[in-house]
Image (cartoon, rainbow, N blue to C red; front, side, top):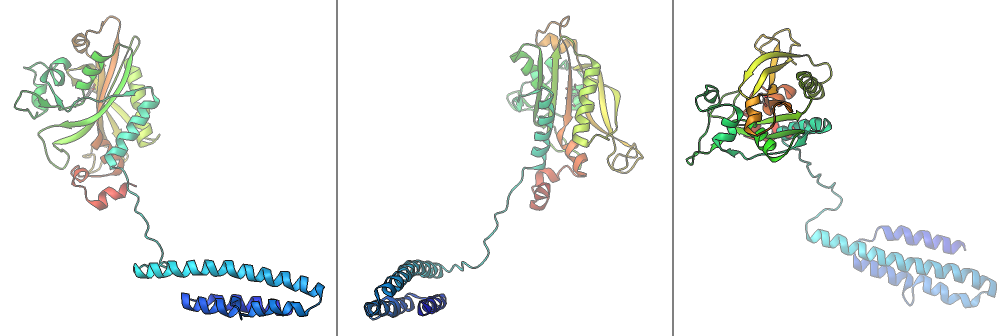
Amino acid sequence: MKIIKELTQEIFKQLDSINDLSELESFRIKYLGKKGVITSYLKELKNLSLEERKLLGSQLNELKERLEVILKQKEREILFKEEDKDLGIDITLPGKKREVGNLHPLTQVIEELCEIFFRLGFEIVTGPEIESDYYNFTALNIPEWHPARDMQATFYLKNGALLRTHTSPIQIRAMLERTPPLRIIAPGKVYRCDADIRHSPMFHQLEGLMVDEDVSFSDLKGILIYFAQEIFGEKVKVRFRPSYFPFTEPSLEMDIGCVICDTKGCRVCGESGWLEILGAGMVHPEVFKAVNYDTSRWQGFAFGLGIERIAMIKYEIEDIRLFFENHFLFLTSFK
Ligand code: DAH
């Protein structure tokens, strides 16, 4: 028994230092070959008493079987290693980590906005970026002579169509496609002939529209305050200012307290303490007329916000062009 124990230890010690197939074969012959150590011991069993033979025999056979299995395994290991060596691979080196990408910061903001309004029961819709003059202006109560047309320097196509200057034409399309009551938001690209540190010829807006029998100005304010708190945090300060848009009456603009100076006044907010983030108002009766909605029954509110503007405030980015230059470091800092 002592011999078997020592033999087992010896075998395992030697096994560790075997590195190639020829060494492995010599090892096999040494222990399991016709004149091998284990084989000889097995042969000697016949000289022992029946009891000793039974006991030692089963132990020796067990060791032999174990060793056979281990040798097979070892052989496979060696073959694998040699294959890796041929390929120039060192399997002991740590693996390469795969870089996980992230969504563009604007996509992240769009998704966040959609999620907020989705929770409020708004359906997400889209519209075409190439629009007709009618949907982009006329149906929104901006007739040809209207000065508001000049405020949105428009890219016209040769065929008389244009690149939409805002997402508001989606309001018209959505109202024509459905019957009220309705609640929609529409994110998308818009185009204006304008370029500097705060303006890009292509940027993104999110339009919102709710039409129902009993929608009031206070519903609009409530929803806008909720949205501002969700996106900028509960402590955000908001204020509403009267404003003018041809497609809403009354109209308002919403500001939030400057996130840098907390309304004290700084360079970012132009010393005013406030940052304008959206325009909104009650849908103008002329707009309802354009889509054949009965103004004695339906009321609605609409709002439109600039997505880059929200992202710039949220992430304290001063130059809008960074969103579109695609510097790797900029993009990957929004994980
Ligand atoms: N379309 C406007 C713009 O691009 C933003 C806007 C203002 C949209 C008021 C609205 C609204 O729906 O009610 O400047």
